[in-house]
Image (cartoon, rainbow, N blue to C red; front, top):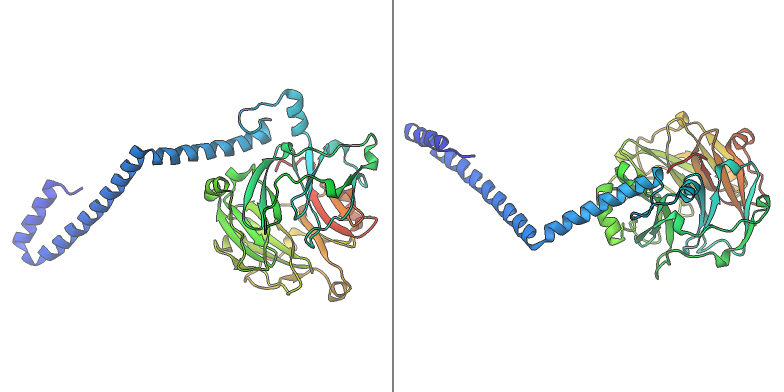
Length: 403
């Protein structure tokens, strides 16, 4: 504030020292400019409030915060979107089950409900019949809580959120050990891809309020951070961006993370790079250098107390202790080679990777369509998935997970 006393001091100063007049006038002019700018901002705010525009923005913000709160409630209180409260039996069933989602680039999503207590090594969950690969890409596997909210992310950058419980589960046969036989051609498409796009990935978003960034990666090893402060706009506009520099590259995956996390990228040819999230840019940049015929096979976050398990299509596992994974000091490098040149030349390829603990489980999908469960303790012991044919996809999960 410019008080009367201050003005009188300046006038006295000018009378006693005329050479200071120019400096005092310059200070007053700068202050008046700041006050004028602030007045214009307040006037715009007042107009926005009177027109209802600002009120609408606040209402949208409140609605988004309530949505994030509902997502968290869904994980701990058995509450679905809106105010629908599940009855005790339904809530208990969803909270005590996991869901295996098998999906492909065409948007097909098959859901299996899994009771953690029924897991056993070697158990056959199902047998998928028909052509499994779509657009030259094998299906992907993903295990999450049955109370989770999933963001369908398409290569065009379009997104759509759906609760897992809205996806009808596959029916079990009377003898679960024999699994369930399904025709992949008849698997439902919950969110139909539009012309020119395919389904890139599925992202669980119940922990959105606890995360700092969306971390977007492309098949050719580019990455980009997006602040979760943009989540309201992203979900409202159903668009997050394609996350690529140019075609034929396309989006591969999106993770929720914090600035202190470490990102691990693993390519199909068996190269791995670990980078700090805080070093990544908010614009699309090359992170790992890949050959023209190589692309990413898995992206994940390093977990405290967890090791990294990388699975190849021949069922051989590569086990890496967390402390052995060096953090890259520079980007755009090829990273660490997980496969020898001889194995790579013989056609060995990576089909999946995960941060794991001894008590975890994994599920594999082979070329004959068999979905099979493996105990992580046994898998770490023998280092091999005993499948009937080469693997198309592999994932790992905790039986007590709340993602």
